[in-house]
Image 1: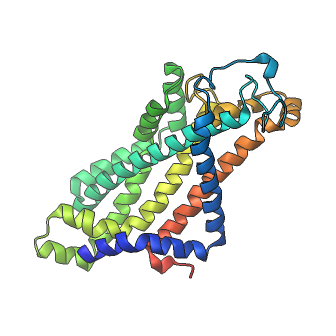
Image 2: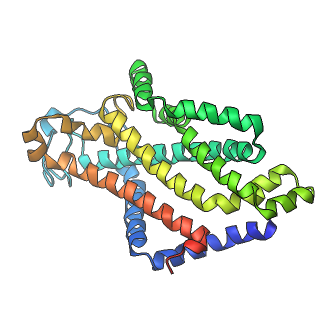
Length: 295
């Protein structure tokens, strides 16, 4: 187990870089995400604190390069590029926050119920089955409509508490398959504590799938937040978000075509985020499990 732990930690980044060298799609995703992260990080120093609530009708909907605005202005008169930066930051925070919490929950509970099985596993699976058939989008819409919008951190907590069952079921299934292997039986016979078997022995062997699932959850969380805010059920008014910026699409067809700069950059950011995280998640999966390597 100690050997597995050392290999998992010492070789991951080396293997990740090697996979990128042989994966043009992964390299493109890494460059795009790196450029976006750099833009968001550096752009924070130029974003005014009131950009989400500012209103300047005289400067509203200016086209790109007008009055020094590189991408134009929003319908509230705010600089579109700066609004895009803070909106992307909020989406990235939400995505990582939700994915991290859900993955932590799924690893802890999924591996425990998968390892021990029995009546606890049966009860947990029935609860998860019930939860998975619930109309979660409808539940989220009801929660958000009654609260009249959420802060970023409250949204992360709500999405995490609502969306964990599918991830727990995946980790539980992976753990069940590993429990039948010889190295687990040998560890039990030798008297190794269950928590060492689970989190030091089994976890590294299912980590490639867990990493891939983390990336999918990250991208999916950004999409759910964007969709809910676009429909008016997500972040509270005054909080910049990609979904709020896309609300311009609710206007007339002429507005959509004539004011293309209001939604095209937002759409490109969403594509970069989802494409980048999903592709790099697959690269990370192959870096952990070299049997799937493209080399």
